[in-house]
Amino acid sequence: MQYQTEYLEVLEKLIAFDTTSYKSNLLLIDYIKEYLASSNIEITLDFNEQKTKANLFATTGPKDKAGIFLSGHTDVVPVEGQNWRTDPFSMTIQDNLVFGRGTADMKGFIACALVMFKKASKQQLQRPLHLCLSYDEEIGCVGVRSILTKLESLIIPPIFAIIGEPTMMEVATGHKGKAVFQVFCSGKEGHSALAPNFDNAIHTATQFVQSLIESQEYLANVGSQDLGFDVPYSTIHVGKIYGGKALNIVPNLCQLDYEIRNVTQDSIEQIQQHILENYSKKASIAKIHVENINQYPGLDTSCQEDAVQMVQGLLSTPSKPTKISFGTEGGLFKQQMHCPIVVCGPGTIEVAHKPNEHVSIAQLEICDVFLQKLLSTLL
Image (cartoon, rainbow, N blue to C red):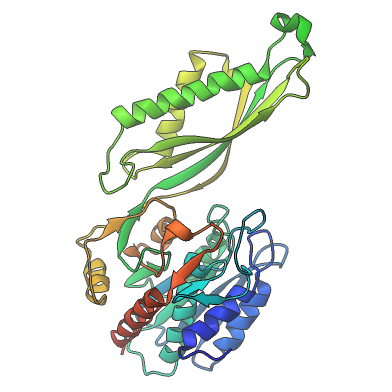
């Protein structure tokens, strides 16, 4: 279908690729390579071990200067079990809203960025423009880590980077870090008629959960506070717990999964130590085995950074910088590139991961104008 704006044409293509995290994103990557095909654009692909997914890094402009870095992720969350009114992988426009999986999180931004990047490649840039598109962000910022290790050899550290996650085109300067843990609680199997003679693994798990609850209360009352967040302290959350085979069998194994989301003033390691010390007062540490499954750092960019002021100045209606409740790849970029990082993109996280995900055309227009102004700073 023909649209008045090129970013809608591109967004329609991007939505049509089912890049759910457990699937390949290579068809989408091939489309982007073809769309950006130009002698003035250098593209580097970074594949996973199975060669089923890839990060894409593109750069245009002079190589000997610091430039501006744009970042987004290509994967989306599953749609199975959700009640969609439209086909989630076919773009639908109703009432000036663009529906489809990933429209807000975050193919809307990617579409606008690709259009701007293509225009930039045809200009005589005084500073370079970079674009990094990752895979497997939705399962813990997994895919981007390998391309990050290669950026040092590909570019001079940028002036600043923009992560295009949905913020309603407001500048966000921070988010919490996150760590995911699995706990395996062991017991001794036996007949439930003789239950007191055996160690119940589920009972052990409840003791561990109690230590999590107590540590959460400690963090809320005594831990660091950052009033920029809706929940101003570090949080602990149990998301899964399962164990047991039958009611008349004392279970010998129970597993629970929990996460820690920390404000940058708190250490994941210190919070975890507090949890384990609480548990040791209730039961033997020998009954549990804890594994750290995934972890990524928080982001805390000073509002006084020139980059923050510059990005705000490019917005038609700038507002006070905010902090967001969800995580991004921004903390990882900060660790690797040592430059200011801000989060700013079209749409709202309120509709992400839900059925009937959408982004307004008005938000895409604001993003498009913003990126065109950003391009003008490189000329």
